Image (cartoon, rainbow, N blue to C red; front, top):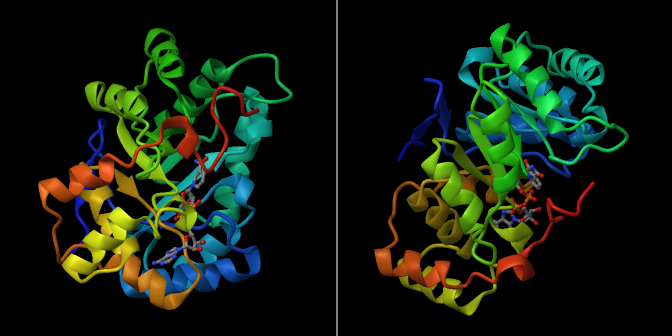
Length: 277
Ligand code: NAD
């Protein structure tokens, strides 16, 4: 099966499955990205804070693909929320990637450090990148409902996506529902909780019944719920395994069973947006 695309609120489309490169060593990133692209991935999720944008750009070139064949996302460094800093950082992102545009650029976290303005002025700076075409879409990450409401009241462009932590132990339903209601696509980060959900007995039982791995079952659960995902791995067999999730289906009962594993905030693997700065 091929990777479905999701329609964003601005007419752009994004492949529902991508390849995440958080915690991939900058020196190994080009190789990992090239391998993912050879397997068939066409969407890469990086960030300024990952320090590996240069490797992402190199991996795309090494794979022999045209720039327009790959959807590339990057994200603004937390320390660069002030408008002039954000402009410089975005310029540098394009230099690192070796491209004249990104497909999607995000505010990585809502709470800026070292800056006495707030994310609304940062968002208005991302709107500049959107209007000048250097970011085909713009969005946010780790935004809570109150943050999204402020943008709705004070800004012009509705975020195309909100990239938040979502997996079977953290459904993040309230933020996800706000997105669904306002045409903001949900991107689920740490889709397998960095491996933390793969031993869950309920998931293992389903995996054994359908003859798939636990990782494939959880990724398939996300796909059937409609979220965008980009699992990370540097192991070639796992990069392939995580891509092979479009030739089987979970029952509605399986989807419900997995959703009932939600632990709320207890299930978080990463920082809480309200306290993280
Ligand atoms: P993930 O849920 O994708 O898990 C990755 C880890 O799970 C790997 O390091 C490996 O140990 C294991 N793994 C992967 N495939 C496996 C398989 N098939 N079988 C067994 N184990 C497997 O975690 P992640 O990397 O944190 O999240 C994915 C991507 O989400 C990141 O690379 C990044 O792009 C994005 N992300 C964004 C934010 C944010 O604040 N916006 C935060 C974290 C991650």
